[in-house]
Image (cartoon, rainbow, N blue to C red; front, side):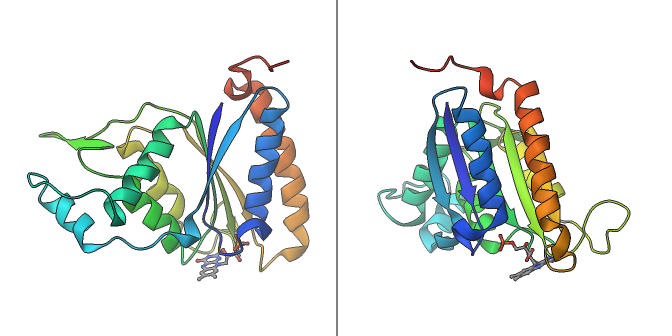
Length: 210
Ligand SMILES: Cc1cc2nc3c(=O)[nH]c(=O)nc-3n(C[C@H](O)[C@H](O)[C@H](O)COP(=O)(O)O)c2cc1C
C-alpha cells in the first residue's frame, strides 16, 4: 500500500499529529506492506508567477521543468500514486496553516486534478481515504467550542473538488487551554484509530509479504 503523509506542522516530527500519523502507519504496516512518501508542507514555497499565469491562460504552453509547475506535477504524482492519505496539521487562525494551503494550491489544479464543466468543478482523481489529524490550542467542535472552524469544512470541500470524498477528521483540542487532557486525548484517539482501521478495508488490501 502506498501511503502519502502530508505534515504541515512547523514543529515537524515533534507534533502530536505527526506522532499519531506514525501510529496509524505502524498499525497498517503490521498487517500489510507499506511504502510511505512524506511531504513536509512547512517547507513548500508559495506559488510563482508562471504557475499563476499557466492556470489563468491554460491555452498557452509553459515550461513545466522548474518552479511551481514542476513542483505541482511532482505533488500531484504523489497524490495519484497514493492508496491512502494522512494529513497531520495544526489549526492556524481558525483554518489551515499557510503551508497546507500551499500544498492545496499546488495539487488542486484545473485540467490536472479537476475540470471545469458548465455546471461544476469535477474531480479527476480516483477516490481514496484521507485521514486528517488536527490539533488545536482551543476548542472548535462540540458544545464547548468557542471559535469558528474553517478548517474541516474547507478541507472537506476542496478535497472533494479533486474527487477525494472519503475524508475523516480526528482532532486533539485544547493543547494550549487544557494541556493536562492532551495525553488522554492521544491515548483515546489511538484506541479509536486502531478500532477504526480494524473495521475498515484500509489495512486489508494485501496479505503480509512473508
Ligand atoms: C500562527 C498560529 C495560529 C494559531 N491559531 C489557532 C486557532 O485559530 N485556534 C486554535 O485553537 N489554536 C490555534 N493555534 C494553536 C495551535 O493550533 C496549537 O498549539 C496546536 O496544537 C499546535 O500544533 P503543532 O504541535 O502541530 O504545532 C495557533 C498557533 C499558531 C502558531
